[in-house]
Image 1 (spheres, rainbow, N blue to C red):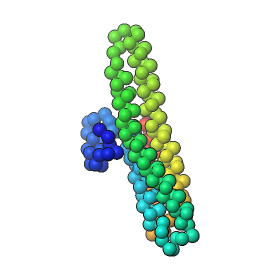
Image 2 (image 1 turned 180 degrees about the vertical axis):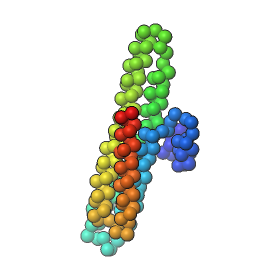
Image 3 (image 1 turned 90 degrees about the horizontal axis):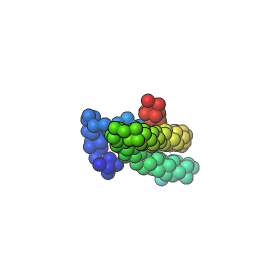
Image 4 (image 1 turned 30 degrees about the horizontal axis):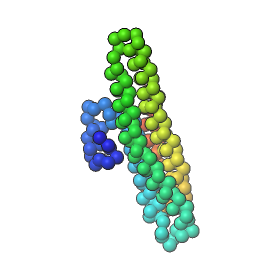
Length: 168
């Protein structure tokens, strides 16, 4: 299942189910992607408007950054699901002999590193998004200040949720 290529309702149904994945890590990435999409919306309402000609290049740069982050965070939704799958696979390895137990422990440790790498990347992307939100707050269409705030709150949610997945 590729969540980025699926309808949002498919992802939400799976998230609400008793399946082990998707879970909080992919939800954190989705929150960040939603924030980036809102940032893009604000930039799109600014770019090309005569009233904002003085900040046109900055708005285009912000738009490009939001679109890049949206794509990267969307891909991290799937990456988190796949990282959990590797952990689950390692957990199912046999553990009858001491050699099998050692192999299983090593596989679990390696999978946990990968599973932690995804939410840490979500944190980095969320931080980048917050910087773009600051820029949009300064240059964006003032009618959309609440949307910039929502984008920033979603970035904070992505960061906080991702950190929980690393710390627990």
